[in-house]
Length: 354
Ligand code: NAD
Image 1 (tube, helix red, strand yellow):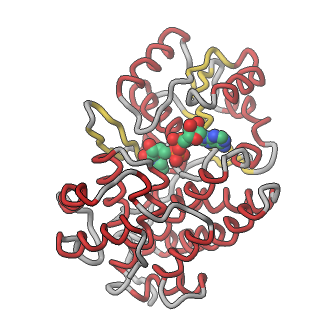
Image 2 (image 1 turned 90 degrees about the vertical axis):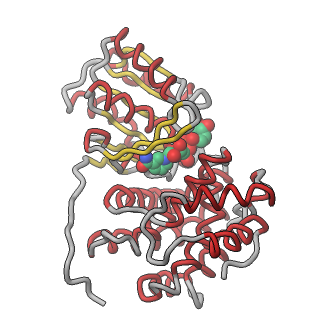
C-alpha cells in the first residue's frame, strides 16, 4: 500500500563512483581545501595506505595504520595525537567499517572533514553513525558531523576482499536494506533505495562468487552497498541489528558473519507481522517468504550458517537472550524471551528459518 504520510531527510555526500576513481583522491582532498591529509588504515591494509600516501605526494602528511574493529577510544586517542603532531587538515580513511569508524571518531573530536574510500560493503561511509568501545562497552551515537563529506568508490579496492569477507560483507549490506523496509520511520525514498540495493546485491553476489574476475558483478555489489548503507544512515534499524549488537558486543562475535547468520532468522520473526513489506523481497528471491529466500541465498553463497561455528554455545543462549531483550529496539513484532530463545537456538545450530 502507498505510504501517505512520511518525513524524508536527504543525506548530503559527494559520491565518486567507478573503476580507477582512487586516482582522484588527491583532487578530492584539494577540492575540499585540504593540504595535509592523514591516511587511516587497519594494520592489515597498511600497504594500501602507503600506496595512497605515495600517490597523494605532498598532500599526505602521515599515515596511521592502527584502526581495529569497534573503534576503541584508546586507539582513537593515539590517532588523535598523530593529527596534532602532523597538523592534518583532512582525514582519509581507506578500508572497511573499522577504518571509517576511526575517521568518524576523529572528525567528531576535531571537526576535520573526511574522505571515505571503502574497501568492503559494510556501508559505514554513508551513515552519520558511530559505534565506539571503552572498557568493553560499546555505545552507538548519531551525529551529522560523523558523515564523510566525500565517498570514493573504486571497484579495484573491493575486488581484493577474500571471498569469505566479500560474501559476509555483502550479506551485512543486505541486512541494512531489509531492515529499512520495515523501519518505523521508513519513507518511499528509503524503501526505493532499499529494494534497489537488495536487487543489486542478490544479483551480484552469486556472480562474483562464481567468477571473482567479474568486474561488473563487483561494481554492482558496490553500488548495492552504497544504497544499503544510505538506507542504514536514514532510518532506524530493528530486531536484526539489535540481535547483532547483543551478540557482537556480549560475546565478541565477528561483525559481518554474525549478520550473515542472523538475518533470515530475524526476518522470519517479523515477516508474519508485516508480510506486505517483505513480499517484494520474496518476489525478487522467487521464494514463498523473504526469510526462506534470504537463508537459501546465504547457503548458496557458502556463508556461515551456525552461531556455533563462531564460538557461541548452548550455555551462552540465556545471557544472549537477556542482552537481546533488554532495551529492545522498535520492532514490527515485539522482541521477548519466549520468541528469542527458540530463534537464537535455530541460529545457533543453523536450523531452517521459520
Ligand atoms: P573491517 O573494516 O573490520 O575489515 C575486516 C578486515 O578485512 C580488516 O582486517 C581489513 O583490513 C580487511 N579488509 C577490508 N577490506 C579489504 C579488502 N578489500 N581486501 C583485503 N582485506 C580487506 O570490516 P567491516 O565489516 O567493513 O567493518 C566492520 C566494522 O564496521 C564493525 O566495527 C561495525 O560495527 C562497523 N560498521 C559501522 C557502521 C556504521 O554505520 N557506523 C556500518 C557498518 C559497519
